[in-house]
Each structure stands twice: as structure tokens, then as C-alpha cells.
Amino acid sequence: MTLDDLRVFVAVCRAGSLSAVARELGCTQSAVSQHVKRLERETGVGLLERQPRGVVPTQAGRVLEAAAAQGIAGLDLALRRLRELVEGERGSVRVATGATTVRHFMSDAVVAFRQRHPDISLEFRTESSSRGCFDALADSDLDLAWITLGPPVRGIEQRPVMDLPWVLAVRSGDPLADRPQVTAADLEGLRLIRLPPNSASAAHLDAACARLGVRFAYDTSVADWDTALLLAELGLGRAVVPALPGLDVPGKGGGLRLVPLPAVPPLTVGWAVRRWDALSPAARAFADTVLDSCRRNAGPLASLSEPPDPPDPTDPPGTSETAPGPRPRVRTVPGQRT
Image 1: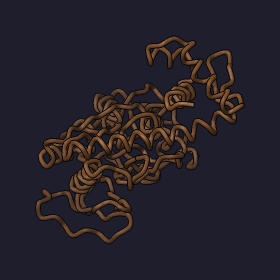
Image 2: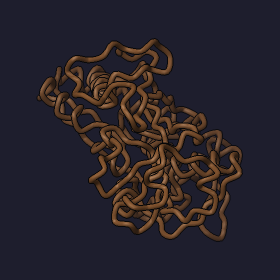
Image 3: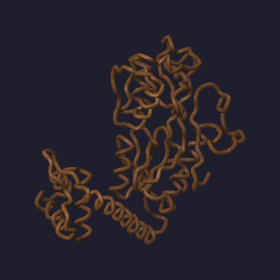
Image 4: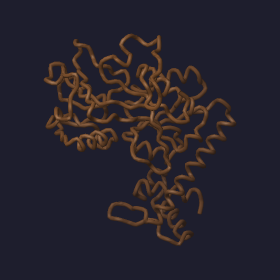
């Protein structure tokens, strides 16, 4: 049993296909199969079950996959830390994000981090869902992933950073545009622009509305929140989206209205890591920088676990807690500098 055997086996379990892994590794399907057969000979149990479309791990295979994936991730992390010790302050921070994450949550933080740590490179990998971010963390040497928090995932720590209230985005002139807020009853039967069906945000919204007894119809679907907002501004539909940092309710002259939707519980976003206490100093510094940036962009809001912060004299007018419109709330992350 070799480390290569275990790496290939984990890849096959994740891909569900011997041929897909062979293409990725640039080898033959027979070579991939030999890695698996060697593990089966040494463990004495069948590890894969062949199906009409690919393969799935057996019960024994799932046990080995979980242990191997965790061990490989830890070993890769240790090897990277050793390289960083040799290189000193040089190195990199690798982050998995969604399509619009950097724009809304990290743009200021990226600039500030590069100014403070010019010798450390930032590498971003775009994933289409939180599930994709979890898989990327498990399968590679990524440090951090920005996700919509959800149920526990084995081998992954999730750390909340912000709570995002929901809003109904409509074009100016829409019958709901001038409401101070909308209720669950106002949403019943509305035709909406659908959020990405495989996203955690869509699942959160659907589950919350189901508990409220609200059902939507959909005109179209989009790949990200920004596209939903653009279509709503163009008058091509209505959208229920999170209130993103810096996305204030426009003035009367704007073409888009964001109407608060307090009945739906806020969406929590933050970090996913393999082990928070194993992060490199550079990765932890970047996570801290993002948190600081989120606090500034959200205004002097109370964290969910502490008394309100005093107003920041550098904040522009209209960013106080009494300002109109829904604003993100910043959480205090346990174990992280605030």
C-alpha cells in the first residue's frame, strides 16, 4: 500500500469513475485499476462497486476513503508548512471562493493584505457551490474557502463571519418597490429569478420559505447573485437575494429597489478550513484582514455575541445602525482576532 495508491483511490471515490481519474492523471484506466486492486489485496475487502455509470465505494471503501483523505490532507499541509519554513516569509495563501465573493467580501482585504505582505501571493480558485469548496479543501492544498454555512461536514471546520439579511430586489415602479418591507404573504405566488439550484443560498431560501408556507414560481435562473440583481434592475423579474456588503438601498433616482424581507432568517457566510489551528500565519492573517474589512463595510453593527461597537468616526454619514435598509451583521469568530 503506497501513498500513490491511496491518492488514486480517493480520487476515484470522488470522481465516481476510473476513466475520469485516468484522464486527469494522464495514464491508462488499467493503471488506475491496479492501484485499487493493490489496496483490495492488502485490505482483503472489496473497496469499489461497479455500476452502470461508473463506480461507488463499498461500505469498507467509504471507511478507507475518509481516513485516507484526512491523512493525505494533513500530510500535504505539513509538507507545505515545511516549504514555508524554508522560504521564510515568502509563500502563498490559497482560497476557494464563489463567483462574486472577492468583489463583495474581499476586494478591500486583498489590497490591504498585499500592502502588508508583498512577498506572499494570493491564489483564488472559483467554485460554483459550498459543496465544491468543501471538496476542494479536502482534495488539494487550499488553505481557506469562503462559503455559505450549512450542516456539519466531516473533516471541515466552519467559522461564521457575517449574517446577511434577505431583500426583495425589484425595479423602480414595481408595485412592491416602495414598501418599507415585505412579508412572507407578499411573496406567495410571485414569479422570481431563481438562484443557482445547487447553491447553499438557494437551499436556505427554499427551506425557510417552505417553513413559512410560501411557494415561488420561477421565470429564469442565474449563476450568481449579481446577475439576479442586474436582471431585476432591468425589469426582467424579481429576485430574493442576500443584502451584500456595500449594497445599500438605492435612492429614489435609482432603477433598483431592495425591500427588506425580515421574515426569512439571515444567510450566514464565513470560512471553511480543514483545521483552524493548523492554518499558516499568512492564511490566518488573510482571514483576519477579511474579517476587518467586513466589519468596516458593514458599518458599526453589533456582533451577534457582543455589545455594539462604538461608532467609527471615519465612517461616512448614513452607515449607523439606524440608517434605513438592511445591512449585513458581522459575527465575532471564536479563535480569530477581532
